[in-house]
Image (cartoon, rainbow over all chains, first blue to last red; front, side, top):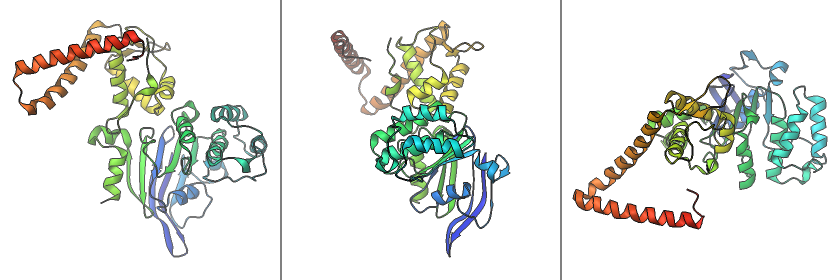
Length: 229
Length: 141
């Protein structure tokens, strides 16, 4: 379980995270939902230790963040982090050299699954292809958890459909997935848990099937209630 | 036998696992899934219906509890061979459809004989239309 407890973060005087607490379970798909600027990306960065926090605790399976923690979590950023002149296969070799959990066989499966061309240069990829490539790098690691920052943002329909398939496949089986989005229409039936964030605070966190069962409400219905009240 | 697993339109307000169970019931009631037939694994079902693997798991658990499917040891799950259960599914689906129909037609306050005549005519028309298009080979329902 990824456990975030009372986390605070600010940039200068601006409070970005204001006492955030929630959990994301292993074997479940958790979606962090909020409008732009709500603190979603900051929260993912904080979990990955990519940005300092000013209070609170983050633990992965009971252990604080550290090198041991990072081997168990993969991060899929919303932009390319490798040099644009690199080719896809070179990036994969780089991963093999530097990431202990890299699984080349799985990465090659993913390459085929996404229809990526291994000799393509990263700088030449379309936005949709870049998103698939980033996902391949993240899912190609044998980690218990995977964090994805806006995997659908600004991407063409067919790439989005292909990426959505990941969530119903064995690629994520048994892992804990935590991703952010502000476009949930296509994703709402695929997530186990929704965590709504606004102004750096969690305003609601719920089991999606339970809300449909008990209240007959869609995730979007709950969002409307919460954000428009 | 044709199943169009990937074309199921899910609504967003009913639990997904119950919509999956309902889909199975419809397939059983219409004979597209038959008694004793092996069904896809949980993992396959998740991928085919594009649902979360946990939801597929939950749907199968529900169907086992309702004795719709049976899983023995490590063998793949099958549709039950229990005739009583299969008959129940059929009457359950018919009952639900009739309830919905009565619910909406009730407001019009139409005399029962007139209503039944209308139902008979419409139903026959629909059946004829459907068998006509089946012969054409284009209808997959």
